[in-house]
Image (tube, rainbow, N blue to C red):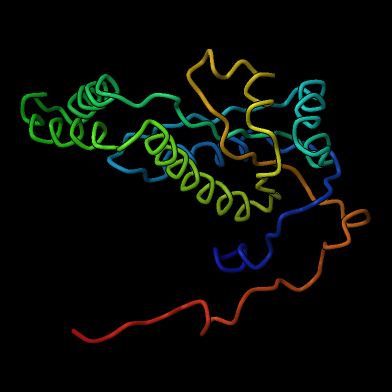
Length: 213
């Protein structure tokens, strides 16, 4: 199946049948999220994997009682780092140098540029919003790879971030939940949207091509 065929196939399943996603398919989805691009390559977020049914039931209570959380195989939580600062820049520079066989001093200009960028946000909240947007790039990549494997993946913003963070102790881990992704397989009998036509604005409305000087 081509990527475009996979994207036409996928939809945000509202009900899932509980069938387990194979470990290799799950790992491919996680690897795709890991390989997603991010601003400056800092990847200021983590992906939590929740498989335990009892814990997913508790999470469901923070997420508008949405059944996918109980019925999915695995629940992914994309969580932005609460703090992004100079130490993360220094760690990234050291990792880059080691990965590419460079002397860290060769990356000094890049280090300073990243320090300036991270320190340049007007408020901590603005920095947090930037980190959250990077997590969404990884979410999109994971959605595409899931579809290519015929794994249903339902992104979910309908939850109480503060309640979920408290439930999982994310604040103590330096994380703040951003978006959820339920992985599993659609229940075509219970999901009234299964098999219905995909609805999008006409392409000529969505794509605006500009020309001129």
